[in-house]
Length: 166
Image (cartoon, rainbow, N blue to C red):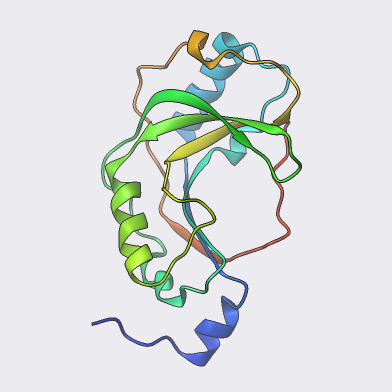
């Protein structure tokens, strides 16, 4: 049974709830070196921004506070790339991830009321945001090393947030 959130917790999440996990330092360094040396991007996000979004819910999910600090179980692997549209009608290069922990936590929080602007959850990590570069994702090499993450963060949703490239 889901415990009802306090009025204070609900008010804190009034614009929605954001749950994510950032790469740990070793994985961040490995991935950034790989991206720099192998993908030849003209623009890319800062290495410190590498993370996986688990939920980006415009509906408040104050019960998500109980997963704050959870240590992600297992590692993720990059399985391919995709181009997503951005808020500014631009394009965003993402690395698609296989990460059962993120899939499971997303499903759990969805059962607790999280919503999404998209019809399915696609675990990914943004590599370049609002890029103007033409990228043939079928020709991009895929790293073979696993990615490890820091503990889960939970924050009130900032509906105005827009990522930026380095």
